[in-house]
Length: 404
Image (cartoon, rainbow, N blue to C red; front, side, top):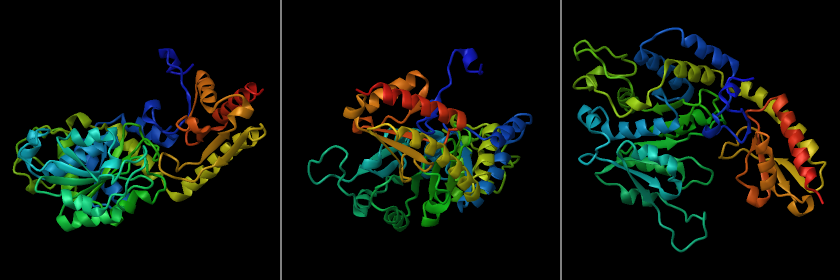
């Protein structure tokens, strides 16, 4: 019996990807051990974040970085940093931004519910780009860099860009616009690791701030994220998240490598990020997972996961009406090996939707986003031999029981 069973909550086999609703990615033992050790000591969190900044900077090619309470927290803090900079009076007013630059420009097809995190800082989202004619749902008329340039004004605080397959305008052009007008560019790259080079690719391109989830491809704590980029903006984000100092300005001694005291006119008060605080255990867990994320280790894991999916593939392909194939890495949490099943629903006598429903009754969760196309996806990152066997057997039972 698991600790969850004791609470009356049955654990699931999560082959639907590292989704927040299921608790994200499963962590390695090294990460869990590090978090356990971290829980046994007390440390000043500003100094711990300064130490984290050095590690994050090395991994990401950024000037500085902090561990946040998830990627959404990173977005809120990034926006707050762009609005306030080192200005304490602005920090104290958030989310009331009526008398300060508060507009964040974003291509309208990239705006989603996740961008509540941007508005939470008091920003007003400005969607840019208008279709030239009525279009079918999900068909997007290309947005050009001039659409963004046309909306820049004295109220512009930042430009936001969500990295997605097919996003436009090209990110390089958006960054160039930001540089030309002195407007910081925030990158939402929450699920984009692996590939590992995405940790530093956007910084190398010239982005000012990057937001990444710690509980997805990095396999850190689910409630962790990373915000990294320009040192001045990271300092602003840090003081708006950390607990306000209790001492006077004269006695305040923040870690100089993270927070330049001389840039602030006084001691910061509790900032808008106070509710987004992150624990010492989460910081250590994230840093451990990040440190273990290198290409050689990932290649070994990738090979293992491919092997697990291959066993499923061989069995389900024996059922007439089922085609199985590996899909190429792409946005939507597909950077870990992923198997797709295409069902001939007429031949099988059962729909992809019904297969997923049956497996969920057995606490096995597969990706059902594409069932209207007769497709089911099996994400590998949370699988081991035992869970793979359960998925394999459950799929065979469902796929064969519906045959006419």
